[in-house]
Length: 216
Image (cartoon, rainbow, N blue to C red; front, side, top):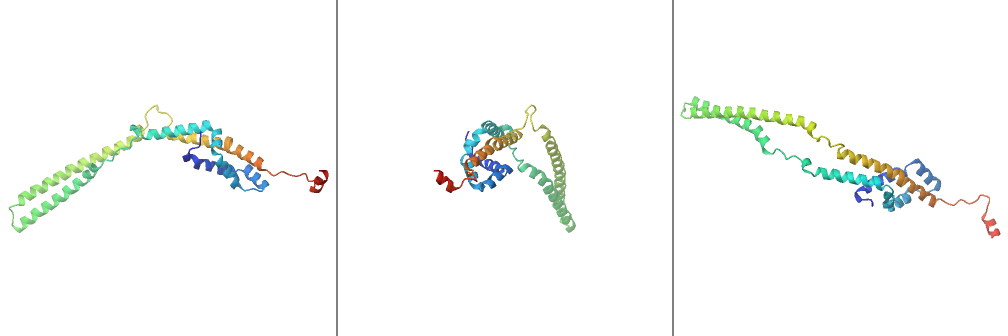
């Protein structure tokens, strides 16, 4: 199975971890080489290295795909926002109280000025608005209480019974298993082979170039 582009970052992270192990760093130091060429060689062979961990990588991709599908299923659709109704529930009592106060004050002002023809109507409208404000305030309070109660109970009923390990936990578990296999069975053996292939050939300290020419 080829390494997917979305997993290249993870591959590079594990490669960085492998290059920084004491074993590889010591081998690079003894050979007088830097990690740049070794890193480039490993990236060029990413598909071959990934194939060594095919079982773990396949399990990780399957778990990831299942997690994606579960988030697009009807049971995982985001709940629509409540919209205008909560706003009206909050604003209605406030508007009603303000209206009642204005009407009552206007009625009392007209009564004080002696223009009492509309005082009764204004007072009636003011008290009616006050009553509406009281009722809407009670309804809004009840609605907020019910909403809070539902949110409090939601976590207990969010996961269906018998569903087993959540998809997100399975993705994390299989991802860690793939990373471990990629490091131990894929990258480290590859780097060891690459280091052996590029290791300098040591001459016998007792054989000089002059002796080699004579013997030839």
